[in-house]
Length: 400
Ligand code: TTP
Ligand code: MG
Image (cartoon, rainbow, N blue to C red; front, side):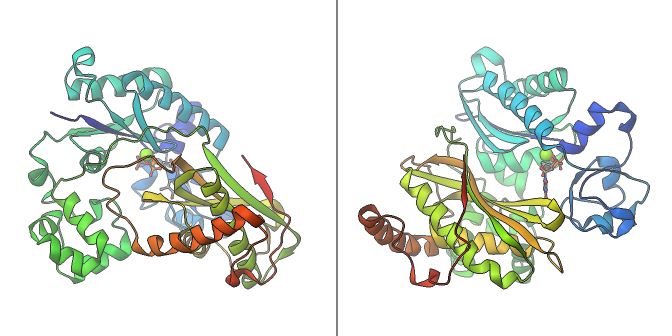
């Protein structure tokens, strides 16, 4: 195989850590997320153990619904510091197997093991060694997908969860993918799935058989990328995290809690403008956008969205933050703090092969950003956009 790409994803990550740290929870339905308050709690499920999934509980479901599905489950609030500690540990294990490790979130990463074969064995042996090492050192199981490229490896790791190892030999990608539901393709969420089904595409094979031009005319550039993935074509490199900076964010605590969401709009725009400008100023680009909201009474939630390619423009950031706002629990709750952030950073001039999912809207917006950046280079951040003339809550705090 020319390239050997592994995608490793931990099983029921937060829930598995809780079961490991408290063995009395092993074998039980465990739900990590907001306080269910006996069915009246707001907020959502972060994740749950496989035992809880049998009741239909899953990530992002309202916690009140999870409670109704199984009131007897063990509900636990997340312990992020502990999850980050385990994440650092597994990332350290990955680095023993490859110099090219690309983390996608706390519990998953791509590894390029193309040159590890002579020392470590066949692709499947490498996958088995990594799984065994994770289990020995953390007591947790992971699922591994192995293929000649990233998108097939990512699809593969999900096929035999938990504790799975799935290998797709080079040249067999089309056959490997053809029967799978289109939702298995990276980036196909609920809405795109409905749209594709309405167009007559049910399986990955249906997309693979279409003409690339048809897919492009139906779905735009992402349609072409879907066609490539469906045919097992993905030239993107595993991107090492080269940037020293891991994240960047800005937040504002309001002088009095806000209950009218429309009052947040100017502040969100202001934060997005300032943050995306700082990102470009530092010569960086980012794949993940994060939103943090703190409600009255101090409950804090975070939401994030990861793009397939890198972004750095104001409009994409702003639209993503508004989308994330829509997914956040809101009704009747006052907001005390709002924060926006970027993670998954890379140097702006790093080339990533196959930034196929390039967003033409983002390209247009980039031109506007570069005009503003040039003016700000001379006059500072006080140069502003016409759309931002409404007064935001200004005293924001920069976080590293
Ligand atoms: P996932 O890898 O998507 O899920 P998982 O590891 O819990 O389960 P699986 O075996 O299916 O991989 O996400 C990793 C962690 O990220 C998860 O344990 C909790 C967190 N998370 C959220 O907080 N909210 C979410 O909506 C999702 C999907 C994950
Ligand atoms: Mg996982």
